[in-house]
Image 1 (tube, rainbow, N blue to C red):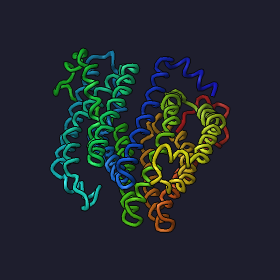
Image 2 (image 1 turned 120 degrees about the vertical axis):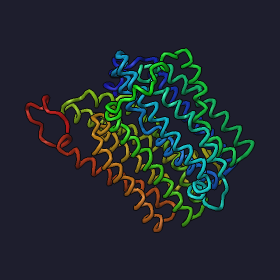
Image 3 (image 1 turned 45 degrees about the vertical axis):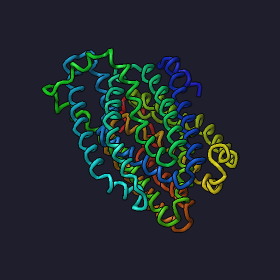
Image 4 (image 1 turned 45 degrees about the horizontal axis):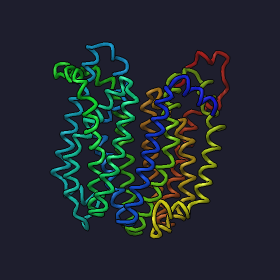
Amino acid sequence: MKKLIDYINSKVLIRVVWLHSATVVTKIVAGFLTTKFIAIFIGAEGMALIGNLRNFLTAVQSFATVGLYNGVVKLISDFKDDVKKLSQVLSTTFYIGFCAMFLVCLLCYYNAETINDLIFSKRYHYEYVIEVLAIALPFYALNMFSFSIMNGFAKYKFLMIINIIGQIMGLCVTLVLIWQDNIDGALVSVVISPSLIFLITLVGIVNRRNFLSHIKVKNIDFEILKKLSPFAIMALVSGLTLPLVMISIRNYIISTEGMEAAGFWEAMNRISVYYLMFVNSIMTLYFLPRFQEIDNIKEFRKEVFDFYKTMIPVFAMGLLVIYLLRPFIIAIFLTDEFERVEELFGWQLLGDLVKVLAIVIAYQFIAKKMFVHFIITELFLVVMLYATSVYFVDLYGVKGANIAHFVSYVLYYIVILIMFSSSLFGILPEDDDKQLLD
């Protein structure tokens, strides 16, 4: 823990850390209020429908931005002092992203009925929500493009302030729409809230018009695209496969256990997402840049086991407290209708503990651009997640999906340990400082 604090003090601006913390807290509070309103005004059935739409939106957003965000940030950071290269990066990503976004918008708008049947079923007619999504999507894509530019130029403070304001604005819009139109308002808010942030971002970039002058068709460079492809592939695999599998699992629960049971499962997932934000923020702030710095097995092993010795006991204790307080969490976070969610906590919490154990090692895939390993393990995870969910739901009902969450991440963790067995458990050679991780 002390090492983490020392690293933040030496490598990261304290003001940025506080803003990052404020961003996470804002997201959690916004999520809590949104979920509470959904529970009160819409109930478990609406929770399930919104869950499917959220997952579909995540997949669509990943495709519309071609998963280029992280790659663009990296290249802009590398070439920010090279005007020619910077122009090539901006031009290539803008036009590739524009083509992908335009294609996705057309597909969504003109296939709204088919998409409605896939994510909501033929019982519901929310085609207009898909059409609104198609109209709002370009603003989201432009916002992510603007964010990648500012992130590449290390405008962290500005980005986080925008995120905080955007979260608050999105929350206000969401609560008003749910209050006024119940399920219809909630669904519309899901697809327009991410795009509203662009209105704030626009104010921030209006005085940075010099960026626009760098975007030219003639500066599109396929070498830049080649450099971006590993980042894009990793982002697309995780951004498309997991959300689509989550939709498939939720639909399976709906078909076997009913819409209400699917709503209970979605409520548990939402609670999980919010307490995991704290751990994910630490990993993003510390482990990703730290793993990028490390070039030998000894340091990598030390970082992983230090995390296990210092952070995991704290996280495990926090999960135990959550488990013991689960009746109060449901009463505060949801409503009495969601009382059955209490029986889902145990397996979900165990799965999340194993998930964190595995992900801290798997960050090495991203840090070292080991995209083949990343793709193999991600595909393994989603296949196991779906297969075990179907199996355990048939045996134990909706609780089976949470059991599957635990089992899938245990299997995933085993695969990760096997892949990094020599780095984590092998004998260290005397000249280890010269040995790169593979």
